[in-house]
Structures are given as structure tokens and as C-alpha cells.
Length: 328
Ligand code: 8YV
Image (cartoon, rainbow, N blue to C red; front, side, top):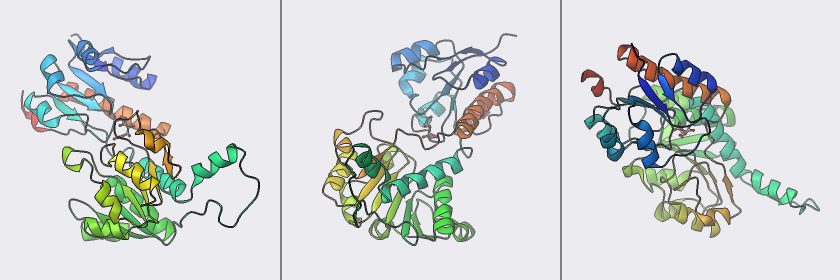
């Protein structure tokens, strides 16, 4: 029996490609070119499965042009690159890669928070530029983490990981807002108190965004929300570009409406709003919150196992639209 044909849209670990090749006829992208939509469609011709990353958009146009496609396995927990409604309508299964990156990403959220609050990159740039000639009492004075109020917007698995680090590791008071409130046992474990969104914005000394992107969460943080925050507050976005209005944020940082921001994700990434590159009080990283080798390998293996499970026994591990599985 011939093997099903799949496309791996971006370069991934050779061992994951080898595992896929044991089950499928694989077209991969070892040079890691970023394909246009037209090229993605061309390469998907004749493919029943796709291994995608967060930058590969699967929408109604792609689905209409690739009628033989049956599954797209995302090597990411976020899946805003998938139009799930269109995929379900087309009978195409979507899978993501949850859990395996939770602690790694929560570590990074905390690292970005600390770098931002304590002005680590800003002071390093100063030092590297040869500007450090003497110590002074308020040089790069930042804000404390320990004992401060940590606000979390989006209290899924990663948000809970950040809450635990803040409450148990740094003695922070943790408050959160989420579409649905956690049950009492989980709130107690995270030592986190539920508040309304405005109270979160007004009260947090450090606000971390970890909510999923959707049209509904577009610009959840804009000029009005930034205006509610304390002028001493820091804002950290490890969620998705588009959750924050980057132009409004750049203006708030320039005008010191808030003290500082740490950003791992951007509207229109990898292109950044030019003003974000001009303001000193922002730590910028290129979407690396899950970037450790163990986490990325686990994500890639999970995406591969979703493809294998689906084609072998109609049993993907982490389906997003499982209704599709019932349709034969
Ligand atoms: C990925 C992410 O690196 O998992 C996610 O949702 O944002 C990151 O961990 C990125 O999406 C590439 O797939």
C-alpha cells in the first residue's frame, strides 16, 4: 500500500522528519523558505496532511484549492493561523501542540517580566555603547518584582504557570482576569484572585498577557486600556501579536503612560512597528517564548504523532475540531 503524502511546511528537527518518513511520503522544506500562499497551495497539491507552524495560514482559500487535504497538524499551542470553522466545513482536521511547552513558556514570561522591570537589556545596551563611566544612586532603577501585584490576563495553562512562579517563588500578590473563572481549588493552588478587567489594569504592577488571539481579542489592550494602567506598571505580551495595539503601546511608552514593556510577539511580525524600535523602555524578543530544544522537540513530536495517529487509527492526540473524525 502506498504511503499518504504529507507536506512539512517549515524546517524541523531531522529526527522528526525521519519519523514522519517511516509513515508518509514527505515533502519537507529543509532550507526553511517562507512560502507565499500561492506556493503553499502549489506544494499542498496531492497532499493529504500538512505539518504547519504558526506562520502557515490555512483558510478557506487554501482549503478550496486543496480538496485532498485531510489534516493540518500545528507545531504550536496557538492556532489562530487556522480558520477552524472553514476547516470543519471542509472536513479537515486541525490539531495543535498543547501542554508540552507550558512550563518553558511560563519560564520565559517570567524572564521577560524580570528583564523589563529591572531594565536589563536597556542597561546592557548602555554598557556596550561605552557609556558607563560611573555608578550613580538611581542608575537604571527599575521596579521590584517580589511583593508586587502580578496581573495575568488569560488564565489558561501558561497563565497558571506564571501565577505559580509569581506567588510561590516571588511572594507576589496575583490577580487575574479570564473569560471564565478558575475553580476554587485551582485558584488556591495558583494563589490567584479573580478580578474584573478594569480592576486588573488599574491594580497590577506587572501585567502579563497570555490570552489566545481571535477576532474578539484583537486590540484587547489599546490606548484606553493603557491609560488605566499605573504609570509605574510594566506590560508583558507573550500571547500573540494583535492582542496589543502596538502603535498605542509605542505612544504609551514614549509618553511614559506606563513605565516599560516586554514583547515577544508583534502585530505583523516579523516586521515591527517602527516606533517600538525607537523607545528605550521596551525589551524586544523575536517570538522565542517556547524556544528551548526540549520544548520545541516535544512540540514537533506531538505534531508528528497527531499526523501518525490520525492516518493509522483515526486517533489524533490533540484534535481541535474532533467532530471531523466522525465524518468518514
Ligand atoms: C511557536 C507559539 O514557536 O505555540 C505557540 O502558540 O506561539 C510558539 O510556541 C510558534 O507559534 C511557531 O509555531
